[in-house]
Image 1 (cartoon, rainbow, N blue to C red):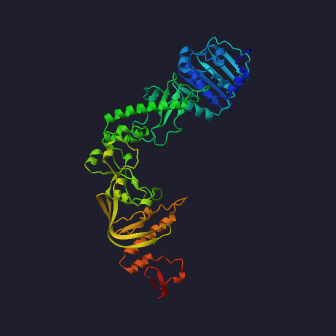
Image 2 (image 1 turned 90 degrees about the vertical axis):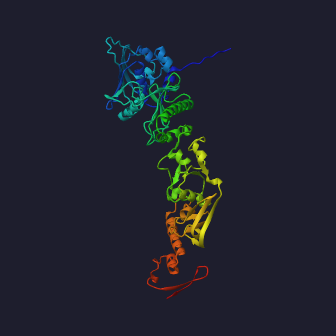
Length: 535
């Protein structure tokens, strides 16, 4: 029986590892990590773009063994570092791949080598450093990076790094570092700092994770405009791991993200409950967006104030397409208090109505009564919220329209829409046993326009049609039909037939042959032109 065992082609393996690092700037983070693990209090990068020389220095404990430094998959760190951080022992390869010549000076000696020789496993001469100055320096010649890219990447890498990092003499900002002044709490996933509690803001769901001081995950590329910034998580490096070779991505990323989101939600809930017990209800509900973002709506169930974000009110004449004609539903100016609802000062309603197809009866009823609307099917508040006990569902109530002193009907034939119009003194919308009488706003009932005598506008066309085809809003058709309907109404309610006819006639500006002439027009019993003669 023949036996075989796995072997490693060292030369090919090392050559292949060159292509495993995420990008050319990986070396920057690796050298930062080495300095930190060595106990340095700072690390300094100096780059000369004209010579392409990058020099990195730190004041850590120094390199114990150059031989170990050049041994792939052997980290050389002590047992505590290995247990906490699981170093791979291949990070220094990124420095060898990043330049063509390197000089290293530390307590275990000095080497000055062509990196191709090292990567080809050629012997390296180590020169003793008898009077080491406690500064480890790595000088890399032929670094194929631009000044701007190095600076940009260092600024990104240093955001939460535990020790100061300098670039060409300037210390870089570390806004997310543990010693930055942020308030951190210890959780199951690591240290967490929450953002957005100093004042209510939108978009409180952005967060960033760091592993061993370096960025490893962002929930989104940028925190949105108006957001509270990022929640900051320093992952526990004994529990979570980065992928080989450069820890650029988390192992089991989706699982880690779910754990982190759960930890964030738990800490945010604790903070909100503390705030709920210490501030006014009106001030607390101002944090509704954060509460909703993190699915914590039950917190609001016993708060005697409804957030403005949960309700709408009809601030202007309802239309069938806010995209075409502008918004008529707006948020309340201020939160609604429970006692206002209990005493009937404010009425809450919910309903669903597709005005263009079903008519505007409920919308007009709500508009004229000043109801506050909780959108039908909304998840704006938890099902256990007290609002639901005082919410009138208008879709479950009978609706009818009563015409008061109807005069006549007429047919409007517009450029885009054509429909019957019913003229009356006013009309009453009944919902169950309650009603509202309207004498100054027309409405569309799903098939025809109901026009009271005090409304001579053409606004009702915005309820009858969106004036949209499959491509776009037809502005010119809308403008023409709104104007024509207005003239149609004026003509129909006028007590003077001459005035009515004048309103109904079009402009003859395109026909100069009739300018200054007089005509006699005869109409038949259906209102059609029977004859036209010169006067």
